[in-house]
Amino acid sequence: MPSSRVLSVLIKRGITLTAALIIAVFLSAILIGATGYDEKVLKAIVITQVQAYKQNLQRQNIPSTELNKLVQAYQQSLEEYYGLNKPWYYRVIPLAVSTLKLDLGWVQSTQVADVAGEQLPLRVSEAIMLALPRTIIMITAAELICALLVLRIGPALAYRRGSIADRAAISYAAIMNALPVWWIALIAVFAFGYYLRIAPTRYREVIYYINHFFEDPLHNMLMILWYAWLPMFVVVISFLGSWLYSVRAIALRVVGEDFVAVARAKGLPERLVVKKYVLRVIAGPVLTLVILSLAGSIGGFIITESIFGWPGMGSLYYAAIVSADSPTILGLIYITTAVYVAARFVLEVLYVLLDPRVRY
Image (cartoon, rainbow, N blue to C red; front, side, top):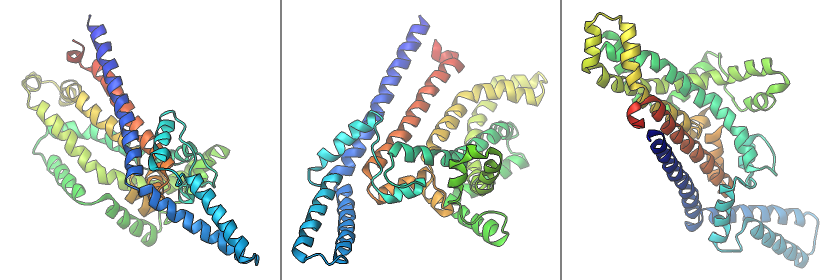
């Protein structure tokens, strides 16, 4: 029966996507450990902490022999804490297994905790859950706005191919694709923040209003919008062009089909032709574009978030990479990959529901 075949296909897709998630986490762990990347940074952290500890002891006028013993013992304890007294695979493979069990461990660096807006000790899961809403507000919401605008505009542009509006949209897309989003962010901060003074110039304060949202929802929502409107505006104008170009290209292939020409020849209203004969056919490809783009936005934009000083997932990634915070790196990879895998599986289900050809 068709239903049993569909179920079998979905199960196979689920197994394949789960295997991809596991492979991604283990490969990341192996790259972190085998290259010695985390070991170099962790050794630098240990040296810095040992020097600070030694200087603190020297102020207490402790005899040199006892001081050296204390420093050596402290260094050994740090090396044991960071796993530097064992080969790399003893350090990262168990970490990968724990990550897959959703035991993401503890944040190791103050840089990561600073982005989260908390102090150590801090769980990786807590740091991610603190940074994730900020990225959703700044980037995912902006991408969703792009998707909603394009679903209204894109098919209409394809339907009126060659019109002034169509040529303007193509020109806009070409210009926006040529300009990096971080460059537009720099110009926006200067123009709206420093020159016109209608936007903030520092965005880190948004942490307080997001973390304490339910204490005063109305006031905190207004403050979040005050901090978020310019980053969202930058993301929308930067990505709207590529969204327009992609959806227009998908719709163009359908607009040229015979069944659309027949519908127009029958004298059906243009709005009805676009809605029933164009949108329904392009629903699958456009849905793929929308869902995967929204899932990909969860990871944040490292450079753009750095320009605004926005403490989201991109900033968390950067802090974790710079400080070689292996638990946080693997936790971020796991979460972002899991979101992508879940999005792919949802697409498989939606394709079955939307497209009869897939079912049969």
